[in-house]
Image (cartoon, rainbow, N blue to C red; front, top):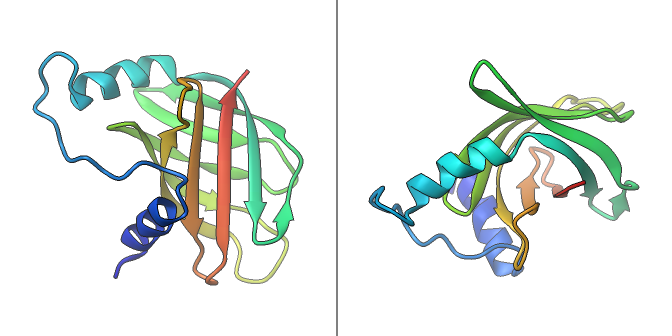
Length: 142
């Protein structure tokens, strides 16, 4: 099973994200239209929370920016998280890396973030790291 499938399965099993409902056709109210709208509304300043295993970090400032049509997510912490975002139905896909002081870093990360229930400005994602650990991430627009 590939890593993305494993992450998605873990996230659904843990009840953190809704199950994938399939691609939509692109008409009014479809996921394609929602993804396009999300691409326009995602840029801004956020509060990011990262939890790696039992270790959690305090919430910190992070940002989503649009540069030349590419959405990027960056934190400004001691352990930076950086990558690109692609809007998908119900959220966005993150591909990037987490810098860390230990051997084997940076850690590549690929995961889907989904809108938290009842919120249009808060997203959560879970990534399975190459080391076998889990990184839980939440971003909330300020």
